[in-house]
Length: 178
Image (cartoon, rainbow, N blue to C red; front, side):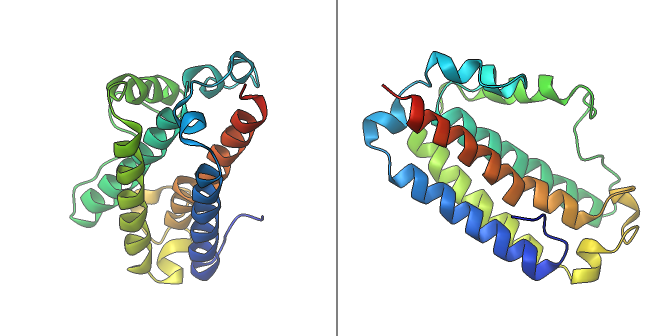
């Protein structure tokens, strides 16, 4: 699927990928949903997330936390409080450490809560996207606080693209689950 560049495409892609994610989860048994990822998952790629995430909950919480980043960032900046997307002290070179912090913070979060939290945050993000026009989402420099990117690009990253990432992980989990 190509990366969305219009509001309708963003809404469609985010909705379709979110539905695909839940269909994949729904196809797994309870045992499989609650199982730790296989050792093969930890070495499936060079990116830190392959060894960081140990189960479905970890991935769902990661998505939820990134929804929170988007929601907080937009809310603050729309209220006149200039705030970067990534919280201090993180930047685009150090954000993997932030992701580890998210992981660590939620080690006692039950899978059922993670599912509920993600469904709720997805709905909030989709409602937020609906409040913006196509130009507000995808015209460069429409908002000074989006820098050289567009608000829509951040929304795509926090929804459709991130859901595709999770689906890839979950498909490998299904394939390697014993």
